[in-house]
Image (cartoon, rainbow, N blue to C red; front, side, top):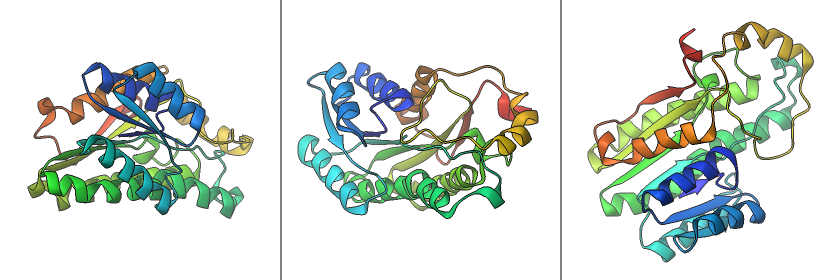
Length: 241
């Protein structure tokens, strides 16, 4: 089950799992996105439209997944939105709430929804998508940075809580990637972007969605069976600077 699967990293991840022989629930906030990726995969995929920040919609999407395939072995939480890169004093409550609702609460809701099924199965892998902003303070705006730090905490807590239940939870931390984040395009805060320039100068190029997808597939695989609670930067060395 891959959220944000209609485009970018989510689409690449859904396609990568399908190439490995997986049956894929292509979850996205838009019908066109979900159906488009599912059509690329073919009969091994079903499209599901879901707003991951909505508890009722998340429950419905998870129920469809279980009813269709009988189980959920892997959940990839990839859906997310960007903030405007604004400094704290210039960040509106609306921006804060929307960014946290999708990036953090949505990841929590999806995780909570699949856990009962995974516990019944006695096995499962959850891969969260945080960000380079999850381990540094100057890589994004305050709302996005706080939400992605929260995703790391959520990842580690789920990993620790269910380590004896056959469930693993890890996170990838993409650096700058060729994507167009879901939702309205932010109106960038120029003052915030100016403050971020010193950090941006350390970038080691732009990543591709496929490079993120390959790490997600690895973390879900048996080759990563003893990796749990890991936070894996996939940024070309940006976070090492």
